Image 1 (tube, helix red, strand yellow):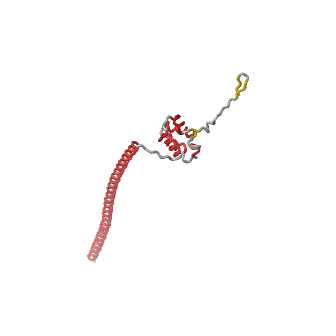
Image 2 (cartoon, rainbow, N blue to C red):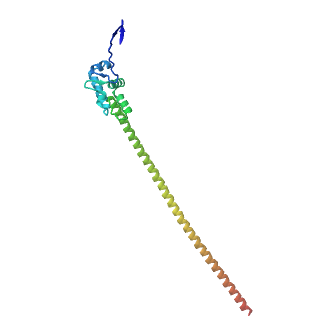
Image 3 (cartoon, rainbow, N blue to C red):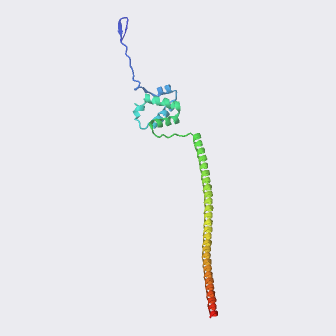
Amino acid sequence: MIQQDDEPIAVQCTVQSVENQNYTIEQLEKILRVKRRQIFNYVKIICDLYHWESEEIFKPSPGKFSLRMLAEMRRLQSVGADEYRISVGRECHRPVSIKMQPAALAIVEDCSVILDSRIANLQQSAIANSSSLADQLRGKLEEIKRQNTLAQQQSAILSNAELLAAQNQGYLQAIQIHQARTQAKQMALTQLRAMELEE
């Protein structure tokens, strides 16, 4: 109540809660300075992204939009549709799809082609390296086989040499025995002759 000249005057104030503030499309057009069609685009993007939320949060009644819808529209308008989708996905921990522009698709396709060629080069390099490694392994295997054959030949030669040495030792012993017998025989004959002469 305000008093003026000692007479009370009744003043009626209507305070609308900010949380319950609703906006028409015309009001949103003025606030955001965009056309009606753009408002509908914003509504579609926001409602699609927040599909798990109740529709009343954004559109409390037909033709009316909430303060939350206005806040999301401002955010969308300030960062653009793709960045807005990404930020909502991050905040809400939900995957979002981004519609790519043709230029972005061309970049992705170029990157894909570059990656494909790099993968092909790496595969060819891996094949060449494995081929080279296989050749090296084959060479080492051949060397091992050759060394093994040489070792077997040397072992056979050594065995033959040992056998020959044993045979030679046997011959030497046989000759020594023969010589000892021959000497013993001659000594016996010499003694017999000496005895015969004495008689």
